[in-house]
Length: 259
View 1: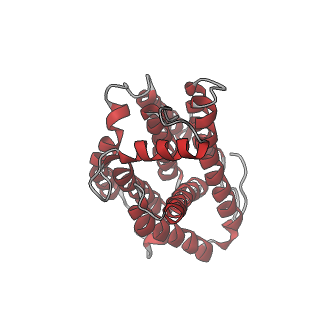
View 2: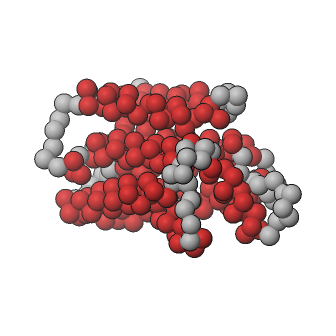
């Protein structure tokens, strides 16, 4: 077995241990965002202490950008799911459920479809897993890093659109405006300037990110509101979609093909 397969197996084992049985629900499901926050210094220390190659520009160093995108998202998760701008804790859970119930026209006594377990799996799959894959695959294969930038950009835009529509702050809006958009746009821009042949991959990465958000919302409603299938099926779909970018490699500039 080659090193790439061993690394991929190790990543799958890592996240399998995280999710089974759903992150030991008495701890990780409730505290995953704290674990992520405390992990940031160790992620940066591990990366910079083992880094041997320096580049002229931060934005052209794909592996470094993959690390920064993951760290930026963890910072965003702190604001979104732990302590928001006004000091409210775990505000996202209640805010999103109220919004969903309002859109659905549900009675006030209804229970929202977003659960702590779904928040946990959404964030550890569509963020932590793809971020880990992006760091692992770069710089040889750029698509996972572009996908990480895509999920960052699309999520940031969704926060801004919601803020404009509601004319109010929502948990995660601050980091979406001041970290997500500038970082993702700068990364995409530099990639286009320095590797113009990967334009197709950028488009595909944006499509992947948009579909990820559609799966996130539609799947949540299908499982926990309309009860079309169990919640664990929803979790499996999220995990599978999060691993899709690993199966796209850059065989030649501007080409995205399975490995």
